[in-house]
Amino acid sequence: MSPTPRSDLLFPAEPTQRALARELYALAKDQPIISPHGHVDPLILADDAPFPDPARLIIVPDHYVTRMLLSQGVPPADLGVPTVDGRPVETDGRTIWRRFAAHWHLFRGTPSRLWLERTFTEVFGVGTALSPETADEVYDAIAARLAEPEFRPRALFERFNIEVLATTESPLDDLGRHAKLAADGWGGPGGRVITTFRPDNVVDMEFEGWADNVARLGEITGADTGTYRGYLAALRDRRQAFIAAGATSSDHGHPTALTLALSEAEATALFERGLRGTADAADAEAFRAHMLLEFARMSIEDGLVMQLHPGSVRNHNRWLYETHGRDVGGDIPQATEYLHALTPLLDAYGNDPRLRVVVYTLDEYTFTRELAPLAGGYAALYLGAPWWFLDSPEVLRRFRESVTETAGFYNTAGFVDDTRAFCSIPVRHDVARRIDAGFLARLVAEDRLPLSEAAETIVDLAYRLPKKIFKIGERL
Image: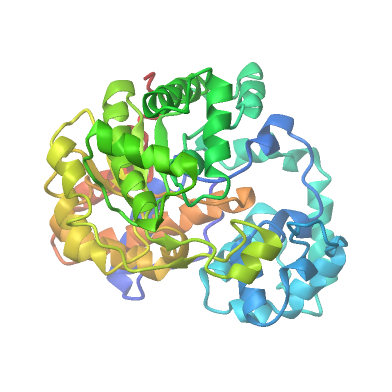
């Protein structure tokens, strides 16, 4: 489903460029959605059960929303976010929704406001503006839609015009939900819902329970993960299982972009210190950095595209983490260096066309200084779209302005929605397509690009590039 155009949303104000943007956007708006990186729970589509009430669908799992309210003193428990120790939280959907609506003004000017409003109007057909006074009316209208068969997950997937959706799982996941999708004709290699291999919890020694996770990895694969060689064998085994479940990429969420080329003896010593519980922070960083080279080697062997998402200080809000756990809005971006950090990996494999590494950043100052020149100079490297704290219309514009002169369009990997909010997927892709239409319209208006080439480019950015770079539909 392409959201119904709301006049000239996000198009340039200058009349000539606006007219061109309309023309270009019309070519992109109905292109199928390729969603190669995100965090939608595959259970939603495997079970295809009706969505719960509007609050549990839209507010409780969305840490963009809950962290904003926390910043104004509303605890996540009052918004239904589960606690680590099982302490009671608000469970009444209407109460949560009213509390959210009472603080709706906090989202003025934010991308969350834009996504939510578009989700209300374009996905659910609710035109009433949200406010404290209209909270119940909007809640009831969305709840009524959720009761209709047309609003079940698979029906919405069809209406959203999603061609492929990639979810993200740990090597410890049994992939049972993806097996159910494959059995129903929705998953597996070349399927519509595929998985992504994300090994952070068995690679990062600072991840809670790392040693236990490594042992569990051995139990799943039958490999001896008490040894470094057995550990690598177990990872290769799980990658093959993920490929059999449709995976075309891996994802690595490290604190930094550091890569290191260690000898087997050096890596083994680090690994053994980690298992003994004597590894320090420097050991953990060195092991993460070395494993990126190991994963690059594995990618050359098995064909998985590597994604690198560095630069987040995880669980910075310790109270939030201790009370509600991971991935609830407590992470903060940090400055991230790429030029020297990626040199060992690029020295080894940067010019090998068999490897594809899509690099993201939460530090937008690196777009011009480091990332665009790197992507413009190495065959293996592509730039990922602005993500998380940077996926606003303003940064999407600045991204194109920052990287195109050095990396061009074709060293970028297309838009990723990176979301847990299933119903926002078409809205987020529509925003990106509108921004690209505006940027290309300016190039045409300035006689820097013929309209015919801009027309080809916007379809490439919206559809063909992500499909190609992430090997969507290919059998590895």
